Image 1 (cartoon, rainbow, N blue to C red):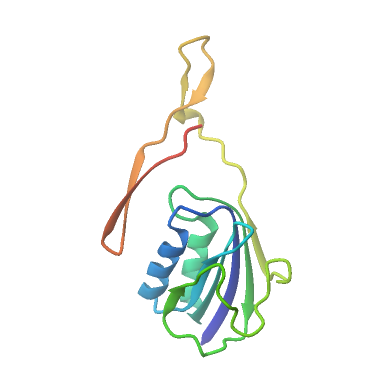
Image 2: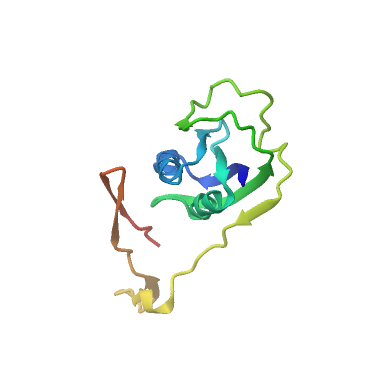
Length: 157
């Protein structure tokens, strides 16, 4: 059964290949829709297709790609328009299709907020000067998106 989700993702989500990764996932899952950056620094996206497939990409949106720090993911389930084909990345200044709602206008059915994460104790090491416990630096991660190898170093604490 076809479904449609309108999503607003906030946090540190620009400049981390968020929209490109969403597009790759959507194409792989055969979802239609679009993604764009908003003027206020968020990522907005619409997905149409099978609900199970949309749920998969929404799980990704809650975490984001390497380098992203997702604070909040707002999801509004809508009636599928059925007029979307493929998946595109829109310009932040593109004309909306009909009346698109802004993040403030969307009455969310689902809101996911990321909790701050403290690294586990085993990932901490004693600082040489004074014995203070500080987190270790994260290892580098490698991801392949549409055949392109992306390497991202984890956050420094």
